[in-house]
Length: 109
Image (cartoon, rainbow, N blue to C red):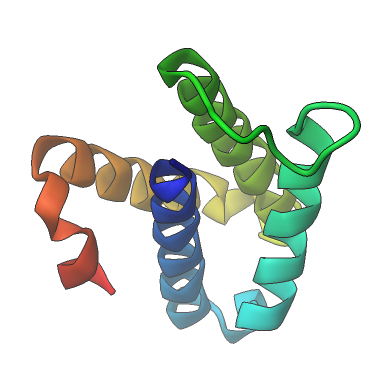
């Protein structure tokens, strides 16, 4: 049920690794990204449990959107202001590509 959330996380991590090619100071380790991602998921999960056992389509959509916004906001804090739009563009292109061509997630990684 959480494949969409995980796929979005993978896309955002991939966009952040491309940013490290723009400027090496933007490098984010997988461990740090995973910790950030888990912290964000915990902050938006239902009270009393990490996640509900069954998630409605609406809840899944809301969680994907929240994870995307919070992750992008947090990662953008580490970028120079001139590169914020580049990161947003990279993430948006990857997200759009995966919505238009759903099977491409594995090819991007």
